[in-house]
Image (cartoon, rainbow over all chains, first blue to last red; front, side, top):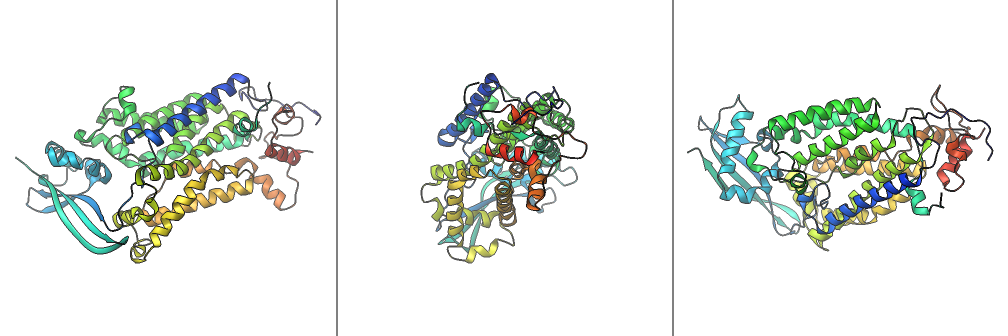
Length: 161
Length: 318
């Protein structure tokens, strides 16, 4: 290979056309190892609270093919006495956020009171809620197939005092 | 410089600066789509009930503030403005770093209310490595090792997203995860017209789970895709998988898909097509400097020249 001409090198492009120096390579090797170590540690020993280095556990839980699939929803009763659906999004949350807090919702009514307050603030055009029910739909599976059998049960309730 | 081993050469496989400039535009403009359209649950935390806030370990470590309306909206606008500026390529080290840090803080808010996703690991890595490359212009086909390291990191992160999900499935679901009803549950809860029928076909979803687990466990093999053609096939396959997941489960790893785009041989497509047509490609974009024999990007590398680089060199030889 022969050098035929020397084209202009844009000096601001620090390495265009040049191999990286030992220090630059060293920093990159260390950064790679740190990220890799954190990610692997999270995968094998971490939990969700270790985000962004936690385990990649979406869909990692095994469900029993003859078990029950549950899904949570909120239903409210407004000041007019009408039962209305309360979506997780209408109070700034995701369904899975609510499901994660289910044990606490059952024991601590303050959570549902907080949701009622949020619903009123976030949805000023809708009438406010005097009652919130946490409804769980249990769908029974048989050999991994849906049986069309389901039960809705109210697992927590808050009523405006 | 001492001789580099094959692993280090792989990690620093040079990439045209053109690809960097292009991915900056794509990655930074995607922030706007993410914030305003596809990941709106983060902005919604400005008006979420505080009783549901559960600080992550990193929030406690760095003493991050509890998300309030003021914090969430301020961070949102800094992120959006920084992304718009970064997309122009101005001061990429500074603007890119601000975007990366703000986006991480943004996602920390999103994951602090009970549900934690892993759909943007590779995109976060992409945002953090882009600023390390320094300035890059569209059409500049000179090769850069800085860019090479950055893009290999993203490639690695994309692979790990699949591989480590299978490890998590084995860890949390157990060795019999594929015979369970995890996807059945997902279809029951968030299935669509394209997937509800699968709930009544015996073993269908178990087979799907076996295939998923096998593909994820074998995902490290994707790192072998080095030629432009293999990369294009890989990207097509991965994107089809994610589109399929969206059609059947209404779940899309959109930020991850943006990171996948960085695998495409953007800078080399022109010459690959030219090769296919049997022409000898000589140019970059009109009016732009072209990597030619004599350019130090080729000639200064007696030690670590890899196949792709040799290809490029042959391609550009006068």
